[in-house]
Length: 255
Image (cartoon, rainbow, N blue to C red; front, side, top):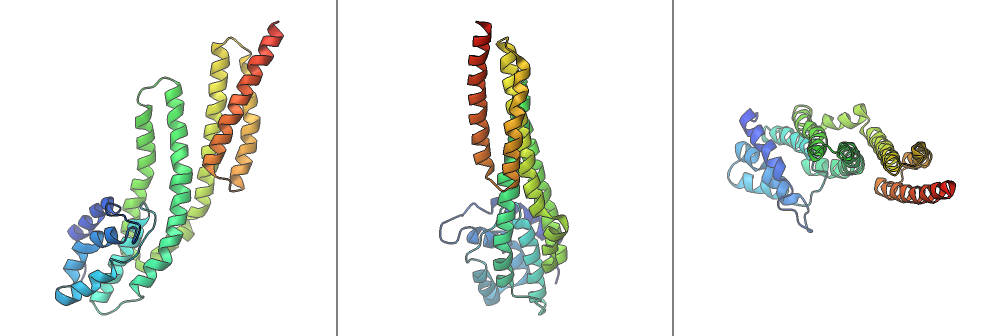
């Protein structure tokens, strides 16, 4: 028995509420059960439905943007179990993929895409463009939406083999590259703000380009795996110190 497209669509929309019942005991466990419930009702009934439902109310936690990939694969496995042909244990599959997906998602989305989107939006804000917040929302939410849709479809059609998606797309490497891009953008933004400030103060504006030197060093630190938030803090400190130094130096030259 195969699930109807309408049922799968219902499950996907419920994924948007995955963390609605998040708690410290089971984390996303109840949310995961809530997501699967429409499909489970189609596949099972009576005591069998109750038994299968209890299996999906336990502990579960992964990155919410990659959870559709897990849910799609679990739907495929549940179809196979309902037909008497389960390829692997569903609980074991969930346990195996949850932690790696969470780690990759945190690095890619929280640690890389979010500061990168913020840096791009801040460029618009620095130019006085009022819809800069909209740039952040569109840029940041578009990529997760693609992952949510494509991941769910891929998970359902490929089942257990959907884990190859990370290997073929080299997502861990993309997480590192996204972090590096975020540091470059934030460094360029810092240099631009210093350059703009020096112009307004009628100082030697080309000195603002010297900000790129410490930013390159920070980029090398990012490649070594240093936290993006820590690098953003270091960027701010470097900009403040250089600004104070240039103001004092310019005043001495003027005297």
